[in-house]
Image (cartoon, rainbow, N blue to C red; front, side):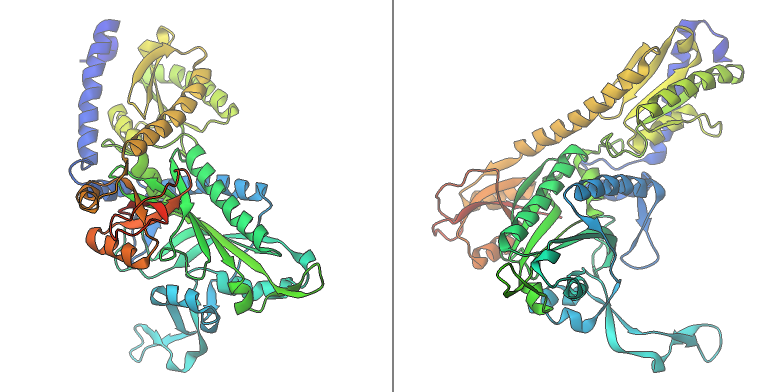
Length: 516
């Protein structure tokens, strides 16, 4: 039976049955574990099935696939612009760091020593049987080189040559690069041995200026997370135990995932004069007296991809905020061969109009996949808006539009559809943000009873608890519950209280959660 020759009402009925059948087939193909059944498995499957990334043959490392990298590129582009608006410039520093550099700042090297990958030789040679290669023992390096776990040491060794006077300050540099930190247990995007990130490193003439910069960059991260990722975050300062190695203060943004766990989504560090002293970076201040430079560093990584996935996505696949979606609109035609030229012509007009508005759009008229398969595939990949151009609908001046965040469909006039889509993308961005805010706020609890806390933390959530400020209490909470103090949050009022563990007076009410 050729459904294209049926009357309009019959055509739509059979087309609906046909699409549902194809959709069922496509859904079976993706076969995604439900979040409620196994959240961890759901995440791992989704990253792979949505074509974001996959495990590589190098243990602990991943391959970021084109679709996943396109999302990272949009993150990169927006963050890079936001950094530059604050006066930051991009630079690049070597991948390899002399081992002696890491030894100069004791706390810093202690924090990273167990994660470092070490280069010991500079040459290979053919083996004795001439069917492979071996390390040439005669090519041992005079000093081992470390593949950068972070770049404070080599950058501050370089800054020594750039800074002589207060007139040379501030230096505001950022680099986009990869780093290497050996990981025993890896998970795509969340924790891999090699990952991509940006690391900002600034030098200042005064403590106040450095502290202001560290706090400013945290606000940049928070603004990016909420405006572009649609991920609500809590800003705060880390406890001494949780600080970055070598920092005097570490500021953080913490996001809540749908399983109630926290994900540290960006950090900014006030490093004081530690690296200035370690690398003898001095300058003549305004009083013509020598002084060590003040430092900050700050960074976000491809962990943000994990935050994006776990905050918004559902049992059907990715849900991407339009601001970061590589493809914001997909147009799929449905018609028989002699109708395709008409559909192509109309699609061409819509595509050009949307692109003129700065909206990324794809017209998928490939004939090697059924419409139902395409529907499921783009749904899995989180494309925010799907437009279906049906030949019969177009004859009546109508098109079908679906929004990915709610899966709601509407039949609307094709005339002026571009303006509707533009507004719809804004609505989707706001809706998924508000949904995430509502979920987070519903899972933030004040708790002052330790037995109650130990029981409730098993189900996830953010707990605001009084803390006596000691590392011993912090360690006991972690040992008993696997939860950690994420930060002393700025957004919540601090009131006097009693530590629920030790019974001692509280120094602050802190945010405690299990975390990735």
